[in-house]
Image 1 (cartoon, helix red, strand yellow):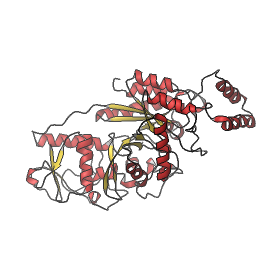
Image 2 (cartoon, one colour):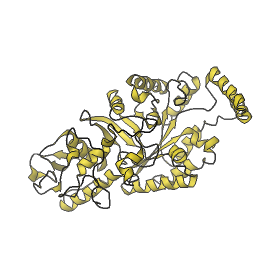
Image 3 (cartoon, rainbow, N blue to C red):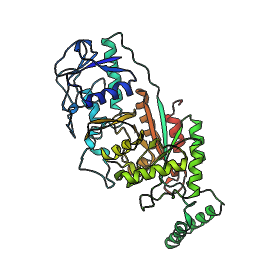
Image 4 (cartoon, rainbow, N blue to C red):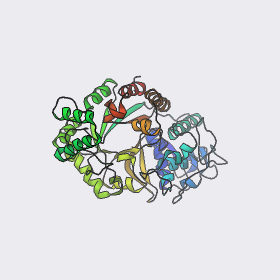
Length: 429
């Protein structure tokens, strides 16, 4: 049990301590009333025998900073919130800044989808987005505490991989109903796309598999590498160009969700507008629950949309426990500064919630649409992320789309990439 002391123990400090000790180091901790009893002293002046951290404003209630100063390297890790004493930076305040996403609150520079860009982030501007800083700081802190107090021991974590699949469009042609199918044929005729018209016809007649029907391959490849997949289904009302999923009323979608729910975990992928509407959010989560005939425990907002704190406060209010939106569309890396799921702390309400935010470090469309990487460079990038996560024995989360496994249209030549990535990052590789 790690004993902590501070003259001012507020909700932010409790959150930061929970991130470091409960979730990353997986060890118990308690706040004591006497500095002489503490292993760690968080105060302006050192009191007692504990390791000393000097606070900055980041840990104070009501403070929101967008660009704190860069601190010194600490055990080889970049830091923020430099101080004149203690370990040289405000570790707990830095955890609040990154894990609670302080820099995203009211940030004026958003992309066309209303998302916070990686290039605007503190880590992005310092070129360390690919490093799980909080995990590195926590393990360095454990090293210093163990050296100072011989009776302290810390458990050893196990490296893990979580591979997720967003199903934005379950099928390219199947199950879309008469109106959308007729519109597809008319669109082929208008564009003069005879090849697409023939393929559409063959799929609808059952002569050829639907290009997006990659689910058996996905399940088999994940099983081969001992990595369980997690599927997220988009069931928003049809709203071109962002929500073009199959209707939740279509038998083809219900059959698919039921089959996958029997073999893997299935979560909800709230649509483009659901990030701004509690009503839409509840409706779409309910639709997935109805399709899978079970409770929805996991979510990820479509397009990785979601402003702080409102979008995540809505999830917490509706009783969700696991969200996987914490990734960037335009870059690989660790949006929360960690490769460990950490709780959502609402800086506006200054309250800790039960909702866990799972960091997504790698997405297939990031490589294709934003970074314009070729297949081999994408595999290498995933392997580099895995190396960073293995070093701190954390969890690497991947994000795929079912069409990325299709070898069709702009995914042509990429069919080997998911398998190669899973082999490169897997726990037994």
